[in-house]
Length: 143
Length: 143
DNA sequence: TTCACTGCAAATGATTTGCAAAGCA
DNA sequence: TGCTTTGCAAATCATTTGCAGTGAA
Image (tube, rainbow over all chains, first blue to last red; front, side):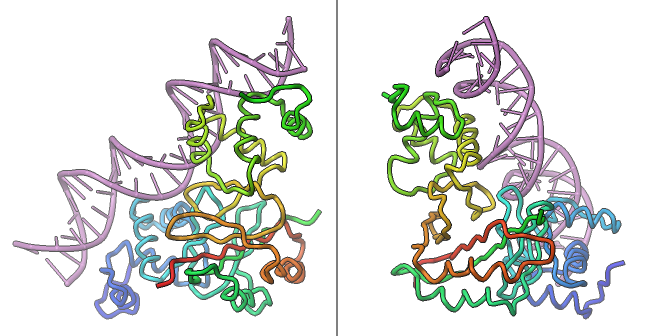
């Protein structure tokens, strides 16, 4: 059962970003944010709702992922041109992409890799400002 | 008219990668490689064939882009989850993405940014080897 | 002649949308 | 009650595929 008490933490979190805490949004928020960082697609998240016995349509999963992204609760990751991944980690960080399995993992932020963000501003074309730097380190199984 | 002489340079280039130099492939190769580096989508390249009066179907444009990519003449760039971009520059380099217009541009390779390639090997997870590092610097118009 | 290649139209897969019914404030 | 949100099915968009006809060697 989803906790619908008017003052529960999950309800407050949704209200804080201007989203009405409906049963579907609460259930999806729980799947997404209850555990550590996750990388999901609409389809993968929908599958988990079905396993968990949550009644929600695929269209609502799509809509909710976009609403959460607009609200800053999720970040969209461009890695595969055929599907959209959403990342529950909205901090500044980058990704490993496992070509064999299609899986995504965060690159630990302490790595030198992220120093790129400090370098980037120096190379911007005139009249442009930095929106974001995305780094994807593509990996394959070592032979 | 497309030059179909058995020994023309364009014909040789296609033969060299194992592709039969058909009228469609030669015409597309000319659009792609006659000028400097380009970033195209199947649709944008198809539009140019229509403007140029080249008879070719959209399906063939898709197939040819993939054949050229497999042959190493093009590189696929993952930037926008809704469409595939192909880059005529197959050298090791990275991209600016102009969020306002959807355009892509190469980041001049002399920039420090590319030093990332030297750093990357040090952070690989066990059992994995580097396939490629993709960096996208997303830009918006400065306000 | 032969097999690769092309074009068309239908199929696919991910995502979006229209609209009536259901739910939250 | 009144305005959101949801669910379903249909629509869309990019891309792929089946297959009969065309073309290069």
